[in-house]
Length: 116
Image 1 (cartoon, one colour):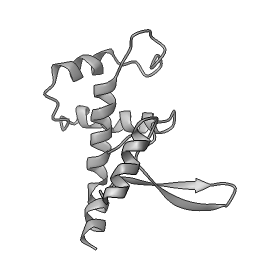
Image 2 (cartoon, rainbow, N blue to C red):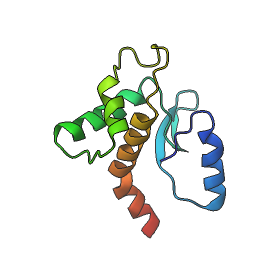
Image 3 (tube, rainbow, N blue to C red):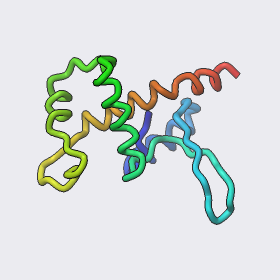
Image 4 (tube, rainbow, N blue to C red):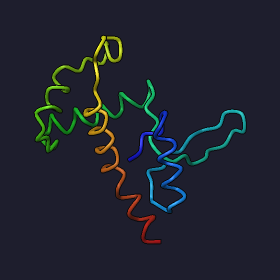
C-alpha cells in the first residue's frame, strides 16, 4: 500500500505506469457531486484514526503478528492526542505497519479485480 502524501505520489504514479495493482479509495467530489476512484492511501486527520483503530483491534484480539521490538517501542510511545506535536516523535514503523494492515483488509476486493 502506497501512502500518497508527499513523495509517495511519485511512487504511485510510477506504479500506475508499470501496471502495478494498487489500493484504490472512493472519494466524493462535492463540486461535481459524484464519486471517483483515487489510488493510494492518503493519511489525514480523518483516515489516520481509522488505521490506528484497525491496528488496535488486531493487537487486542492477538492477531497483530508483531515481532519487531522497534515497532513495539513506537506503539507504546504513541499518543494520538500528541501525534506530531512532540519534538523528535516519529512513528514511521507504526504508520507503515498500519498501512500494511489496511492493505491486508482490502486484499479481497483487490484479488477479485486482478482475476477479471
